[in-house]
Length: 126
Length: 186
Image (cartoon, rainbow over all chains, first blue to last red):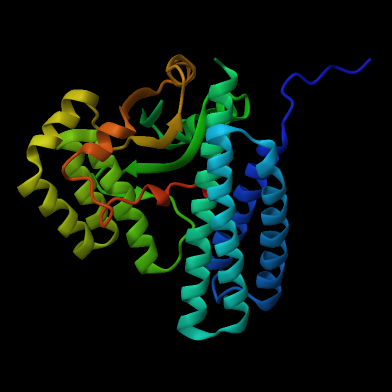
């Protein structure tokens, strides 16, 4: 008989992990010597889209403060998607600007979603 | 409660153990970690923030941002250190942060010192973190077991400070996940 997992991760934890991973991937691309490649950016665009859709789909399952923070996080994820898409169509300085904007929006989405997790944990402990 | 926490360790390896332990506490839902960074002070007193950024201007911004946060947690000794940290990474920007802190906001630095009594000595490293915690014992107990000394300030107190300024204060430069450079892998 296997050990029962007591620390079950819920959807919000998974969305947070995916958002953290997205930020990590964008910051790796931004820090890449010689610049991110088209393949890097296409992968980021796919990842951003998947995380956004997943987060959007979970808003209705959350309550109170967690719901609000998650909705804010989705707004930043949508902006991340937009800037990653712009970076695919640009070059030079405008490319750098789009990647940095995507990074800042991904950071903001990770922040909002971790605040959603904190709100949910705090409510559960009361 | 939302707090900024600084955990001081005597060496870099222990600081990264502390960082890992902090994210383990998050994984166990004991606290929620919103962001972390590791700051080192070398034997000469210079500061260094571990970052992925390779672009000099962005690396400077990260250094100044985390340096400013360190200053907010640290009070007079740390505020000077925060400015020096910025200077070590980017002289002009660091100088501006330091001058502003020294000339205009001394009273708030005194307040910060009273509240945190935090000093990062030469050769020491600190984990800086933005956390939500319903009680302080999980972090205090775990970090103490690793030899760390924990200092914290409520985020509200930090943002109420006169010298809190979005132009100089960049909590967004804290990594929102466990980032350990390959040179320091556990």
